[in-house]
Length: 152
Image: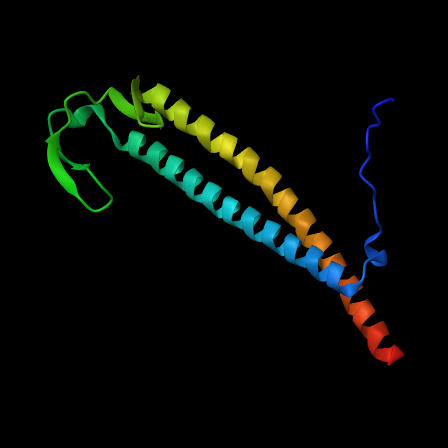
């Protein structure tokens, strides 16, 4: 007996009845919600990396030995002295930190920003296609509802 590769069967959206169309609508809305949340999170990450670029740019060689405020959390800062303005500690993810000079740190964060920008563009295209699919689905549902109303 030969193994048959089952091809997924395609069904025209116009052939579905209203309850099935409602299920597809709900699924599309959930996907859109998830994609939109992902888009927002990526935008926030991109803003964080852009902020890191700005922060690295603020470190000046002439500030060596000067007192600065060092952030421990978003709202807690402690005084410290800038002892090595040429090097910074970079969070490379999952709790790992690496010492880099300022130009390496800037390149690291710029690469992150560009990577996220590319992902945002791809995600935006996906969101737009899902939204177009949902709009098409809604027009099918509306026309079926009108046909059903006229038939009664």
